[in-house]
Image 1 (cartoon, rainbow, N blue to C red):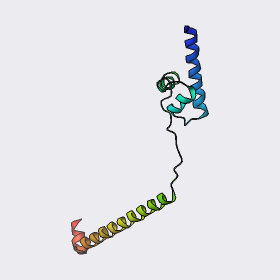
Image 2 (image 1 turned 90 degrees about the vertical axis):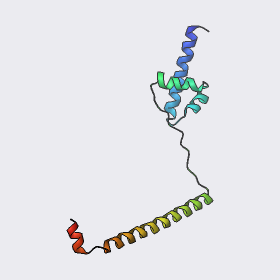
Image 3 (image 1 turned 60 degrees about the horizontal axis):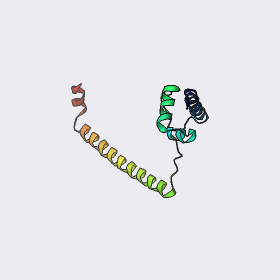
Image 4 (image 1 turned 90 degrees about the horizontal axis):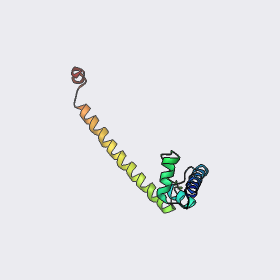
Length: 111
C-alpha cells in the first residue's frame, strides 16, 4: 500500500468519525468504532488528536421502571419519610426539653 493510499484511508476515517459525531452528538466511542469499521483505539486518537474533542457523551437510555419496581421504590420512600419524621419529632422534643430548663432571665443573662 502506498503512502498516498494510507493517507487517503486515514483522512477518510477522520471524515467518517467526524460526520458520525455530527449526526449523533451522543454517540459513544464503541458505537463510532462499529459504525466506521475502525478500532476503538483509532477512534480515540482521531477524536482527540485530529478532531480536538475531549469528550464523547455516554449514551443515555430511558429510565423505565416496572410496576413492581415503582411500588418498591415508593415503599422505601414512605419508610424513609416516616423515619425522618420520627427523628425530627425527637429532635424537636429534645430542643423543647433543653430550652424549658432555663428561665427567660437565665437566657437573657447568657447574652
